[in-house]
Image 1 (cartoon, rainbow, N blue to C red):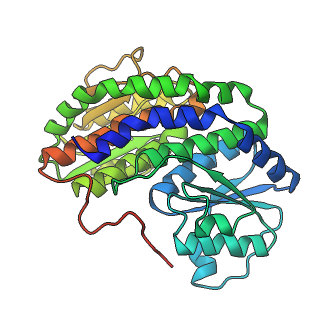
Image 2 (image 1 turned 90 degrees about the horizontal axis):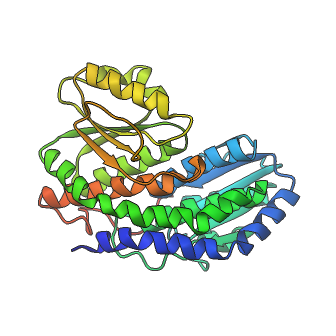
Length: 345
């Protein structure tokens, strides 16, 4: 059908292959820990920035380390002298050729940081400037909208932080349970096509989640914007309640991620509140979660550790971007005005 669809369906196999050999991630975690890092900064752009948002949760919750997103322009535009001692700086880029991310990583290393590159190209600019490289081995991604390189970045980060903390159960789940769930999640495609038909003439979409799946909301909104030219606004469920929910009016479409785990009760309560305000809610959840009154429910197998659910939950979001683009008569493989490598300085 499209290159984007082919690459969506490749993802389970890529994650399984990446997790089949955790030794590079264990070695990187040992060396990074030995550096004495007490803080974590992620430098990234676009889809990789959404992977970094997921990485923040892993570093903070699993490893107990303060973590945040870097401000590359602080170094590359403003020339700020930043003290990076005791800091682990992780640069993430599909191509590894984003100049400001690569330069930020290089400057961080020179100023005392231990640096790690997560990239699909081990010989890239980003990789050459880092202490260590974690290759995602996703293969050439031909569609402009990133799918398989995003989930391979998530998998690489999860494998790294699992190794850092000795979370063997997460490592095992990444090698079997998660790829199996990703493959099974592809069966939701027909239901997604129905949602795409419903949204065909929409001019806006709100996407919300909380916890680990906040990254899923960010990435889904980006994919919809890139391929459908539709204003998609991503929010943490908590941030949504602090003001932006005021935009919701009757028939306002809201895509809501309600994955099992600590955030589920709050997401279901938010679904009720959104529908009370007249929103048309589209809920991504698992087979066991009762959802009453939503305009559509996309059920995917989310019986994986909560920390790893974003690798599965994002699939219906990717498929929605694909099929909504097709429903609107667009080409999801070649979004207008975009290229595979974006160079920001």
